[in-house]
Length: 123
Image (cartoon, rainbow, N blue to C red):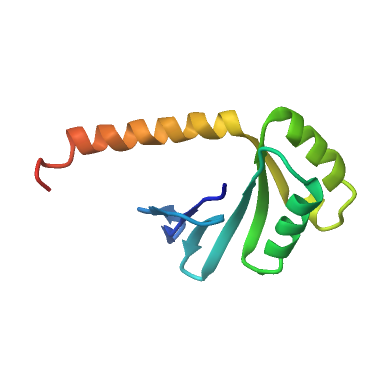
């Protein structure tokens, strides 16, 4: 499973509107370049494969950080394996999938509220 948020726009240092698309990275665009966060979601499987996928994604100079998303047990195993990989350990972030689901639920609720209260019917 992989996904990304792309095209959050920044102008003169302030955050602007964004859109959500499917894919493998989370990114934001700025006036002078693009910043991408790459998410690798893993429920089970080879940690070496996960590390290799993240290392491949880091060949793109615009990738600011990489994020491993999984359960607490898998994340702990991943931390141990990734600590020995130069370059990856400096850019690696961890995110428990239960937090991801909670954030998704919150964003979904905000979107529904905005659509219900602020967007005219039939728009």
